[in-house]
Length: 328
Image (tube, rainbow, N blue to C red; front, side):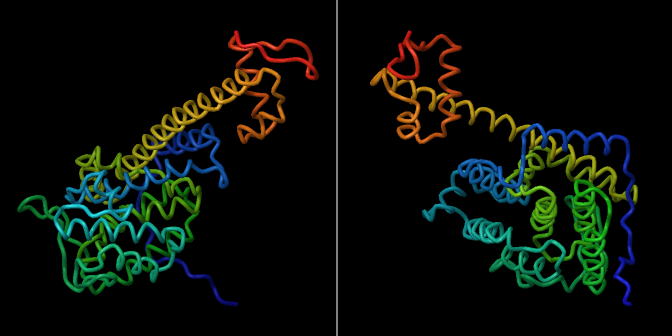
């Protein structure tokens, strides 16, 4: 009987009280949003959030394309801009378009995503770096990545760890993100792929993360992002980075919740107005006729009628048969 593989390297980190509190708060936030696998954001909101994700992740890497320009590219329109920046946007769109096809634990999928993300931009697209690399702040080297010859083994081990760990996905995805940036497996595109892969890992837990633009919060607090990486480097563990990323996830969820609330409110107002207009045009209109006219379920129509009555907008004269509505 063969033994299941175990990673030879266990990433160092501590699940502090702050991390535990953030995980609980995020889980409660997801619960309050009533998120389930079959209840995802509306198509328009998904599109907007995907655009924000691409825009922010590229902006962190100094791409100057605006949200409007990225939207135009997605819609197949021509835009003016630096050719390499337009190519970065097109590549990111291609990479995120196959997000649901990727397996976050497979090395070949990681290399495939990098190949799409950097196509036509770097010589080693879809391949690990062959040279040493350092991360610089100006002229100062703030991180020297492991030797190139060790990269394939380190990545394989990290993928195995994140696949087999019993640590909560919110925490393990942050650990992966940090360790991936520490390894710096590619000549270019490490930040873009690292952030994308954390999203992919979180999607395995809750599909809503496919549409959560965490990158926009990371961009907003970009200096803190680098500071968290630097602090984790100095302390020899990813704890500080985990805290930072969990705060970004929580803030992004709160923004999505507020956006959903506003969107639902507008949608409800439109539906209410449609029902009210129908009643004005035909005071004797039945619930069944309202269903067909508005394109809504019986319970949905009854809920709107109840709300309009409670708000003192309409009243009912007579019974269900032979009666009519009266607009106050």
